[in-house]
Structure formats: structure tokens, C-alpha cells
Image 1: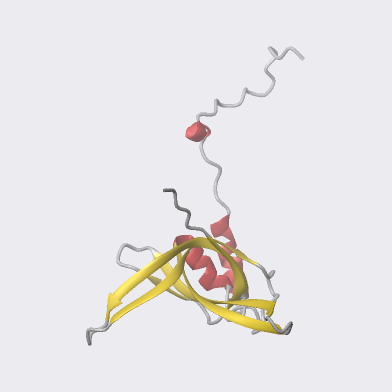
Image 2: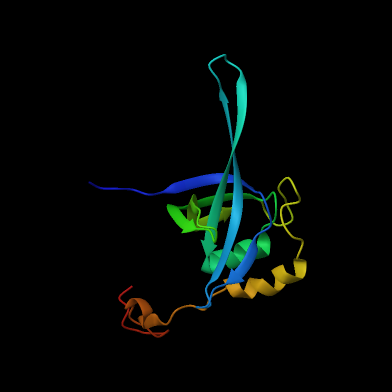
Length: 158
């Protein structure tokens, strides 16, 4: 039987992301996401319900989240569910369902915020990090693309 494990959530961060690096050098951050739902109950009354979801982000996504997001920032996350189990030092078995975020989209622009200001105010960090997003063009052979014809080639029929 086929299976499909995909989650798409839109909500607000419940706390500031805390970036850390594991022994292999990979960046990781755990964030809390509050997802609100509004629906009518059987009596026709509107009910507001909030679901709190733990999300783990890896690599460059984790670094970007810690740099640009803060408590209250609106965020869209796409990823997969993961069920973790562990045992506490006193022998109790624990488990938790979380989302491993594979993609994220920040929903507020620069300088705009969520309910708590939308993230840390780091104008200097933002200016310095812009060069990290600009990547050099890959070499022509990176995608098996033949090199462009030299300018002034007279063999062109048009």
C-alpha cells in the first residue's frame, strides 16, 4: 500500500528560534508554531481553537529562520510528520509527534511583524547576509550546456 506524509501549516511562532549546530556541522533549530482554527460547533457558536506544533528546521533553512524570524512571526512550513520516542533518566517512556520542515516561507516582509514585532531587529545582520543569498552562476558544463557562440560569428543565417 502506498503512503504519503506531507504537512503544510500556516501559523505564528510561539518563541524565538534558537540556532545550534550538531557535531557534523549541520545547523538545526526547533520552533513552535501556533496554528489557529475557527469553526462552528453543534450549537452554531464560533469556536477558536489553537494547535501548537513543534517544527524542526535543518541547514540553511534553520539559519535563515534564526536570523529573520522571532516570536509572533507569521510562517508557512511544508514538511513531513515524524514520531519521536525516548526514555527519560527516571525510566519513563515519552513520545512526541513533530514536523520536520523541508521548506518554509516567511509571510511578513522586512520590517513588518507578527503579533510581537515580527522578529529580531537586525538591520546590520540583514545587510551582511544579503551576499549569502547571491550565488555565482554555475559553470557552463554544470548542466551539460554547450558554450555560447562567440560574438560576431558570421555563420548565422538570419
